[in-house]
Amino acid sequence: MNILTFGPNGSGKGTQGAIIKEKYGIDHIESGAIFREHIKGGTELGKKAKAYIDRGDLVPDEITIPMVLETLAKSKQKGWLLDGFPRSLAQAEALDKALKAAGMQLDYVVEIVLDRQIAKDRIMGRRLCANDNNHPNHIAFDAIKPVEKDGKLVCRVCGGALSARADDQDEGAINKRHDIYYDDKTGTMAAVNYFKKLMGAKVLSVDGSKGIKEVSALIMKQLP
Ligand code: AMP
Image 1 (cartoon, rainbow, N blue to C red):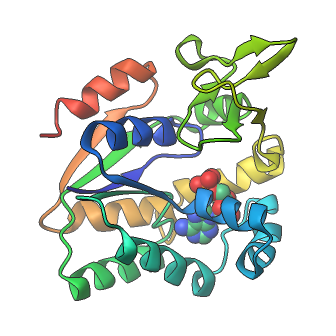
Image 2 (image 1 turned 135 degrees about the vertical axis):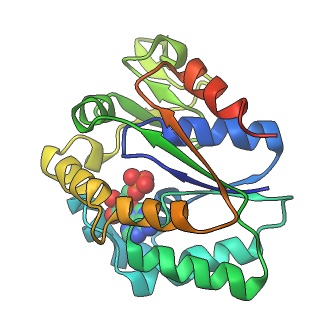
């Protein structure tokens, strides 16, 4: 089963992606997380991408598109869930072309719909686990609140160290990311509409203002 997920930063898309990955045993391919791994590892790609990411700008397509398509081609699981890509109409067209060329089918498009102001308020409270990107932690949500250990907040799943992403604490960077997401001419909403119009994949649009469990139930009842 191959899935594309869409949702503004702060919509809980990563959290839902982790739940779907767990249930179906598919690869969770997150473009932003791949970039952060490169930055952590000090690779050439990471060095090139960092300034864009810190500002909340898109990393140029000549870096992003091959990086994601190569990861997709290497996936050895029984399917994948692509998260954070495509983020523009141009990326949507490149992905569609690559999937067709590889004879890969897209089964579902999951769109988490959320008001821009709510998404913005949510971004600042999320925390990243040093051990596993798929361990959700958020200081404002009881269901995924970090736990306290020796006076410090640590990952609720594994006790790992937590950090906040620099681009999540910078209002300018948050606004830029949302400008890109809600742009329906060439931005991410244009990519969403592109895949909605394509024949083949089933589109699920769910209300992201609900709690994590409710959103998850809304998605799961429409997946096989
Ligand atoms: P995310 O973790 O999805 O919020 O992504 C963090 C940052 O990585 C974004 O603000 C962009 O700078 C970069 N990035 C992630 N995915 C893409 C993409 N599909 N195209 C261009 N840049 C991206």
